[in-house]
Image (cartoon, rainbow, N blue to C red; front, side):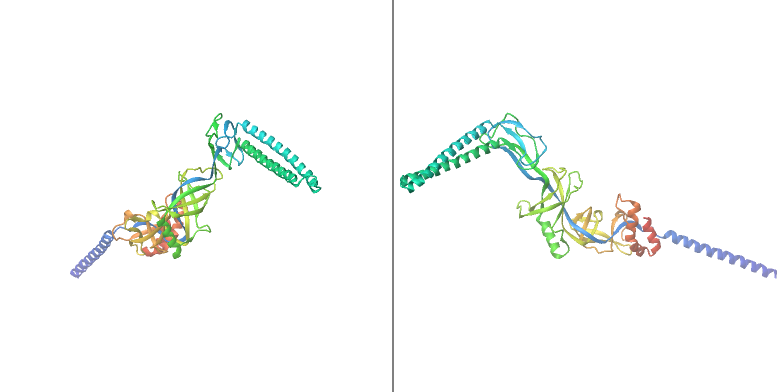
Length: 421
């Protein structure tokens, strides 16, 4: 019995040791399995492709030009006596600007007035004589020839009166030229001559320049390639013309700021410049405050077409090269693959995608340096730099929460991860 008890105790000890060994081996295997697993998928910023109304805008260089320009010239010869305007001020049409010595023209006007008075007196005498001869001729008291001569003298005197009136009018016009007025309303520049200068002697001397700067014209050019591409897009139905006038215009100033007043396209030239292959266009921009000045260099954003179902992606998501444009698309299983796309114009820092993407797809925007071969990635909502984290992140996360759940296999965990990002 004692030997049996000893054997049973030995078997119990061996069984306990075997169980501990088995448990230790299983735990070691589990630990080694956990340690042998790969790193978690890399997080990359993505945007979910969605359609929205998009205008096809082109940014082109342009120059501002006054809508009306008039040179103020001296049409009367004489000494410039006075300048009666402030340089750089706004003037009205007909406002006096310069005064030229009027004495010679006043004398000419007085002489023409005297000549007219003499002619009118002669006409009165001739008219009276013709009226007196008429009854005498009927009574055969004077010859018919004498009456005809009297009538002819009357008509000659009336013609002299008309000539004298024209001469007086001409003298008055020349006298009026002694006061130089503004031909149009606008802003006048500096005076080109000073008091005491002899002007208008032999030619119309330039005195100043008046420019109408409200509204302003902006002249710019567009390549025929862009025009043909736009027309084909409109004809195919991808885009429609923007507005009744066919285009809307925005002006970007030299410092990069946007000019608040929108403009309108006036016309596009019918002739292509053979040296550059460009078409000249002109737009009209209101300028009530006078901020825009003639000759300024600006950028013109010309929106010629628009679509209700356009697709835009951030510019940093697009890789542009000589062989074409492409983006990185994240599949539902987390795999990343390049996708060739057709890029249109730039709209507010984003590229308009004409072909190659469908709504609902995820386009990679950030985290390209984290890609490791064909390893899957974890897409998270991308937030533009400078955007408010509290407002933009949840909104962006909601756009990609469903695809993220499909990648990770656990909807609640993925949604919370996207919301946290």
